[in-house]
Length: 225
Image (cartoon, rainbow, N blue to C red):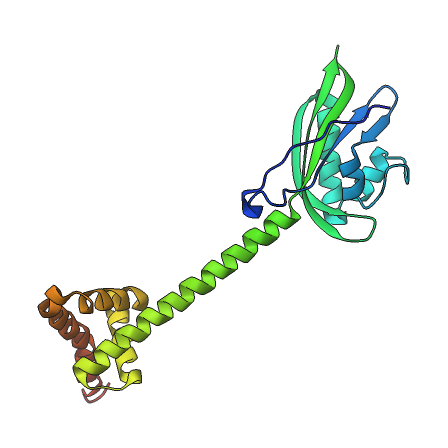
């Protein structure tokens, strides 16, 4: 029995503590025999000896929406030789969905397919942790932005003796007139306020913030508008 070799993997998302599962396969075109590594049996939800792997079984575990495209890619490689690769969904025997990358090489001899060697890497955990990390970072950025805006509002409230809503409206109005994001304006304001050598510039900036609001107020008071 020809048992395919083990694939060594590494996932930066998992920090190397729990590398992604990867299994190998080998298809002998002459005998139409398909061999799986132990990892590939496990990925499909089986144990060695429980089933006999075939191309039909391999394709049957592809997600229905991905199956035809995967079959076309494999068939094209078998017809002309060379490398192939596909990212798709795999449904194991327990109906669990995996996100996997399948890659391999179809080897020809005198224009005839001799064998196909390949591997399948389970990227499910990697994608999960990448998504989790991106979500956490997005939340942290949002909280950081909100904190900066709150600080900027506090600066304006103290300098101009106004309420929280009025301070935010000042930032929002300036943003509309200058096409600069509220968060960017708030960040600039906070940086100036935290620099003891920039108090004069801070006062100038606050006056600049007030100007669009004053212009708008004057415009609103014009009869007929």
